[in-house]
Image (cartoon, rainbow, N blue to C red; front, top):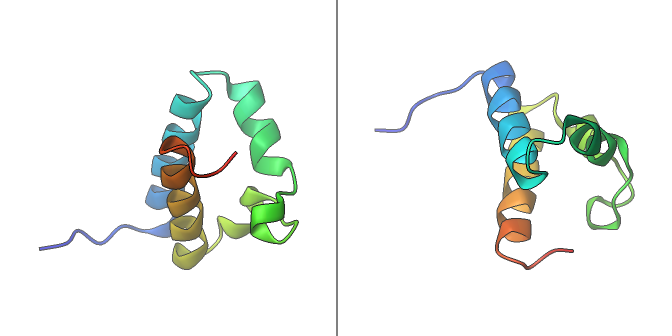
Length: 71
């Protein structure tokens, strides 16, 4: 059984994941969220955080980054 999350809950989850990757540095996390990324066709991650699909896209990117597949 899969749990259904709201977009707000997913955003909160993703933000915690981002903070973890930046070792708790909220300034660096916010900067990353607002910076255009080539892997996102020069969009910033924050611009994708309004929909479940966008949030999932960011979660996938974070997972790949954590695995060393994205720099």
